[in-house]
Amino acid sequence: MTLSENIVPKKGTELELEIQALAFGARGIARINDMVCFVDDTLPGQTVLARISRKKKKYCEARLLRILKQSDQYIPPLCRHVNGCGGCSLQHFNYSSQLAAKEEQVSDLVQRIGGLTDFTMLPILPAEEQFHYRNKMEFSFAPERWLDVDEISSNAEFNKNGHYLGMHAKGFFEKVVDLQECYLADPIVAEIVKHIREVAAQSGLPAYGSRAQKGFWRFLIVRKCLNTTDLMVNVVTREYNEKIARLVTREMTARFPQITSLLLGTTTSLGGVAFCETETLLYGRSTVYEQLGKYRFEISANSFFQTNTHQAERLYDTIIEFANFSRNENVYDLYCGAGTISIYISGLVRRVTGFESVESAIKDANNNCVLNNVENCRFIAGDLKDLIRNIPAVLESCGEPDVMIIDPPRGGMHPDTVQAVLKLLPQRIVHVSCNPASLARDLAILCEQEYRLVKVKPVDMFPHTAHVEVVALLERKS
Ligand SMILES: C[S@@+](CC[C@H](N)C(=O)[O-])C[C@H]1O[C@@H](n2cnc3c(N)ncnc32)[C@H](O)[C@@H]1O
Image (cartoon, rainbow, N blue to C red; front, side, top):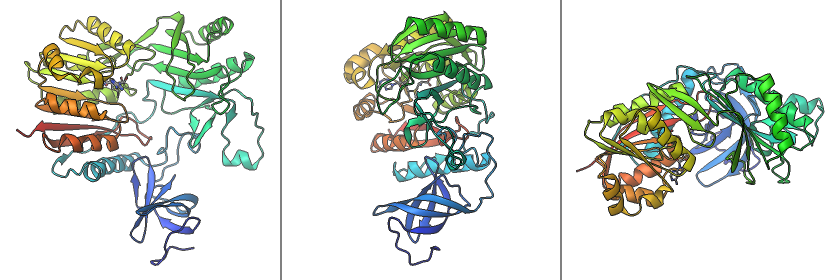
């Protein structure tokens, strides 16, 4: 059915749609009369045939059936996995269009969810490297693999008890795209994936299936540093097995002499998060070193570290520019990870206190101060909402904050943490976020009474993916 003025969208209706923009999460936006319709896997400028899959009061969702007219912003993707893999959802959208779309999404979310309009929206900071920029990749094992359309139509061989290893296929938590190449990471990463997959297949132990919640081989995490030559390979299994530890050590060190850290981690968690409960060092050091600007950082397997090394330096320079520090200022670094921001800014301020929940990251942060001869940073471990609940104790221990840097995980700040920030009342807040929707929600509360949003700058840390990082500056109203 062709789109006409009078169509009332209903579930199951097939219609022709013109994709006009790209929403956060890389979903195409079309309009049916006055209603917004989200169509996954589409690009602005395309005309598509789609079927309505969900109808709500204010919007609807449609599933793409066929592209009728290609967008002039389309470019052929490099990677063979682009259709199934959840990694690069925008590799077929030219880079300048990706940047424009991300900038518009951030501006729209801050205004629409945050209800904030009186601020300066600065242009997005593009990434200098659009491929091979990630220093860390996580892959999951699965007994089933995702098949692309050609494989399905040719009835490709498919073993339901295989050893498949790669990213989770879009929309299938049980299946992975069996990775052969990846343009986000250094090419050695795909070689490591292929080799460890063979090792697992020969081991006689099964890959973990998330539906059955059974199996041995769980995850592979590779950190390939960009400003140093360090390479960490962390193979994660359900439990420790001495025979497998010996097999992995022998195979990986023989095939990849450039490995500087080889670990066997274990996790009993049922979820899909590659966080290790135990770690056994099989070869080399238990940490890797990466360099940001003039500082060197030691990173252990479980610690957060910005995944795009070169763009992280530019992100941190943006934080410095926004904060406009003076030498005598006292800074709190909330959600500080391995202390990278604290240390990066340490030479510009009097004192920094970092807060972080992961103990090993705090250990790294302290080691990193020693490594860099930094003496004015201190780190506190624990859940932030508990750490800063007792305001008088925090003020006594850490001093009144002049500036706060807040860089929470995707979900944003816990409401109790937002309230604590509103009691601690630093003069300036530099809010960094990898999720503009939760950022906008938190900004709205901070700006209700005490703060004014001054400026917002998106930073493209993750070309070809739907993700965008944002830096926002808030100043106290009085
Ligand atoms: C986006 S990362 C920021 C890391 C750091 N600012 C950097 O640039 O490397 C968020 C950090 O918050 C930590 N985190 C998550 N939830 C937390 C909580 N409730 N309390 C304290 N830290 C938390 C995570 O472990 C992670 O290190």
